[in-house]
Length: 318
Image (cartoon, rainbow, N blue to C red):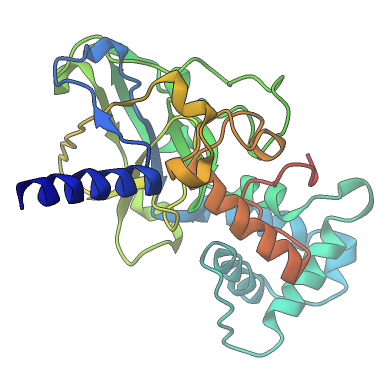
């Protein structure tokens, strides 16, 4: 009986190995903090459209001869401009049928010919800029100029202010020559005093179109080289209300593997390395980016267009 039990154990182990020959393990807890990439952080204002900027844009457009002939009042035009917020939420609720078509006609008349602009360009004209709500910034225990460590970048929630976002461009590239926009930062010392610290101003009087029914910010934490996308599971999200102090605890899990695993068929190891699928991702593959790329290609197939804040797939409008 003992021999049969041993034979069954060996057989079972062999079958398990054939089905899943790769195993993963976490690196020891003693892994040095200074060798771990600090995550990227995106600060997304709940106010997607600046009231001040949209008022200025409305006045500018209504003064154009091509638009003035349409006899649209300023109050009506502001109502129409608010529907631009639906571009972020993929909704198309209209108080009156035909509002979206009317807005489209006005914008085509305003931004055609020499003034030609696409939706992404117009959205950047009315977004709340980082300088308008990032009051004070600290990184690594040192006060920094916010403009030196924060930059406007697209996320799945539109344009946000990103820290340590090392992605080279806002599209998927098949070219290895595309360099990172900046080296990935690492924290030299653990602890909240040496991480990222931000003082933010909600500027509630400038609210025009809100992402969620609250005044404050959404904080996205994600890999520095991934496109920050909530549906793909690539980001951790925290809502920060006004007049509050929020401390966010960050932990890291480091996984390592041997070089021998590269020679195994991906079907058997049930995972991919960043250097694989080079034709689509230029040697910078990630599961999250793969999901986003698949979703964007489906949108192109069905709609022949891409939401302006999504990355373009390799070979499409780079």
